[in-house]
Length: 373
Image (cartoon, rainbow, N blue to C red):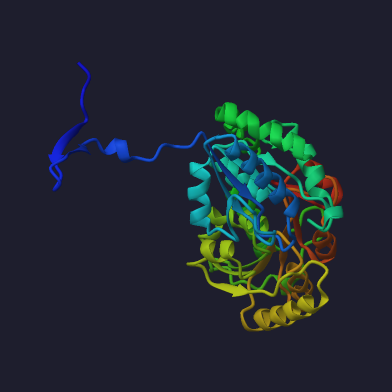
């Protein structure tokens, strides 16, 4: 006999009205596919990606497919059909990523790492300089370099993206994360920290002469360093944040941009807000130079560390006047060429750390330490 999951109650009109007794009957059905689109924190719009995913979403929902899509659009145009938000806090991003079956993102290392951390092999659409989506095409080269490992899928055209999304509709398990190969190359924060401490305490610099004595004025009895971490928000911040297992043992102060991701990540950390954007922006370079001079004069740290971008330049050059050692960490996603900030900071960098063996050829005296993601 079939089970009946409702009872009849008497309506005021005298008509029997069935009433559900199983809460599951009112539970929303999970859609066939949940898609999260991430454009990152760049000041450059990524309208091309927004258009591609919004058109696909419109077509599939018109066909009766059960698909939900959330787009973190940043500086990009507002989509016509899919749900969108400008930015996501760190907590909101994690929540959306865990719920997603598929994550589509630009070629920023922090965003790719967020997807892999959620157990998803993302679909990466690299930004193009000719479309005004970035200052150069390093995301294209990075996606080509790392995409060959199978850690993520790459879509260079709308047709490729549509094909991958349709694969996901057919079987979302296709996009389970395969990030083990990246994890095996991860840096040891404690070892990175030991290199930084050795620099400050002894002035010892790899493959070059020691720092002059005026750069080594920390009293020997102090077990903690005063660390100033200077970086842009987004992936730059995420890479420095990965050093927290070491940084939490020391006094630290952050200089970064006033963005949602930075504010949510650093909510319990002492932070100074820098002026943005910095990419080829002379007025903000001068503003950040004044900020750097004021901060370094009033709160001189034992060491400055940075993963770029442009905000690091005035802090590193002014460090020479004040006798402060500097550590620069080249970003994860520039494997085949040095960044502009890396080139500008290299002459006044005491410890140049890189994340790929291939990057050692880009800078004199660079030391590869593994991936800070």
